[in-house]
Image (cartoon, rainbow over all chains, first blue to last red; front, side, top):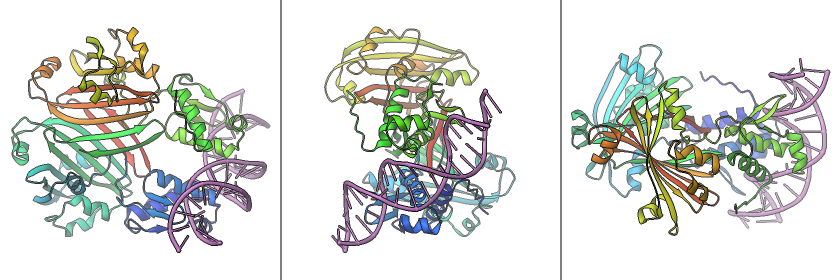
Length: 247
Length: 247
DNA sequence: AAGTGGTCTAGACCACGCG
DNA sequence: GCGTGGTCTAGACCACTTT
């Protein structure tokens, strides 16, 4: 039920390929047909295909190697202004042991707050999952997530005990739009206990909403204790491809 | 003394136009020559010019209108992954009165900390400007800025008493690269007093480094009190042009 | 040596919107 | 109406890299 508007041909090609990549149909490393074959498939010139593939390469969804071909990029679906963080690899890149524990999982009809967080137009069933990510012995961040069952019904069959919902979601649902909100808050007693810090400790909070073609997918609030965490983004005016990462 | 590498022709065109825009030579609203004229000027085909202009339009540096032509975008040099915030318009867009006061201005040879903040390879003269931005009666944020006099010698003649250094810099120096670092810290007694909050209050800190072709331009640390401020960015996978703004 | 992407050309047709 | 950008074509040559 995707609303596939295709105003231009090269945009249609981009949409098709992006769909295959983000949905996981084409896994990382998958080789994409070469430009001449694609041109034949779409009954267009090579230039048109090249325009589409160049744009996908600039967005870091594919990698192009001469003589070899074009391949789906390895860190799939995680290239954007502010990356959809894979916390596990983030922790491991710091040389620390990664761990995850689920604190709770509740299925319910959406409350008013849920609807506001997900920007749901109507009430519906949601799953709330709360868990902690660990870096070595300490808590790395607290995750509070809402999943919209209307868009992701398969989530009903997942308990999210051993693995965080994030990676499962990105491999099951292709997202088309994401929004980050970043702020700083002092930990109240509830968060302080969960994170193992003193009440009032400054925490970096990242809230992310994600949409697919079918509507709101998920809302997640990641709370990082203290000043142990920072976001970095570097860019130039005409190449607004922010490379961002947690520290 | 700009290192003008031009590997491809359309990149050369982009560089030229971007230079004219970011340096202010072409002010907002300036009409750019049409594609045919540019093609003649660069002795290339219209496609090549089109590729360059399309890319600049996607980066929001120019706006293209049929029949009329291409024009330099209004909010100049402030379109990027994380915008180079114009705090004044940010405050005013909230319907609040904007104010600015300079607290101090010091010219000195760079300290070790200065060199680290600016990523200076060698010691040199810098200016440190500290000031406060007000929204209505309250402090909106504290600004601590270093300016590299080797790259911006004209800054020596500015006292930055009535106007913040940020707008002056963006209108005098075209920046080519910027890096943001975002974190959350608890206010120590010094910051607490400056911001008018209780010690320990969580603050959002945004540190930005900016470079031009000639080297490091400036380093600024903006400290926003409490959870009154948040950053927002929205994007899609194949269009990583994050629109971000303060709240 | 051969296949691939990178770039460019010299045209073309169309839609839009200003005059 | 007509100038502009938007898109596309059917070629071409080159650089690179793997075989």
